Length: 159
Image 1 (cartoon, rainbow, N blue to C red):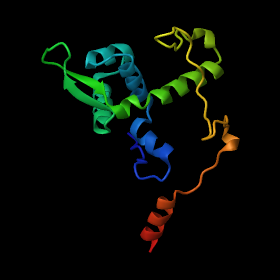
Image 2: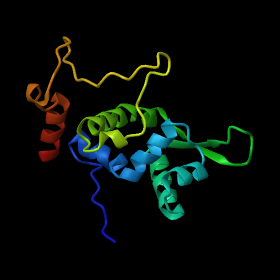
Image 3: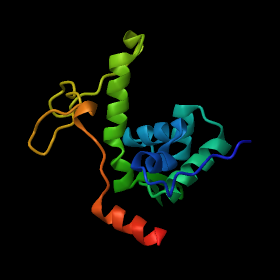
Image 4: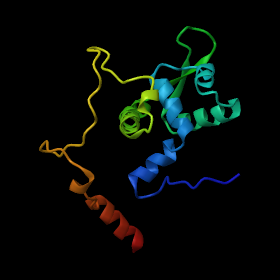
């Protein structure tokens, strides 16, 4: 088995994010949790994932602070997996992935569901990136620059 490279200390926030949620099973577990799954058996039934793999993925998501264990909501002796605020913060990422697939999938007619506003019933508007003054931005309109604190930290380390 090949050991996965850790990006935990990487300077890039995208790499750091992938360290926490970068495999498809983790994203699908989070998707199911956002849709209401809470128990091991619910995740296993939805995903068809082997128990040992599901156990490792759930433990990793708990260790990352994305899920937490809580007593079962029905008062039984079971424990449930509940999204933390950090876990719920992944919702826009999943929406972006969904919308990307809806736009570029070769067989969009096979996509069985659509994301709608629960209150109004209408489709959710496409995610957009806007500047501080409200302008719509594309990748060509953005760039990266060092944070002032990051520059100071690097100088301190290199001395």
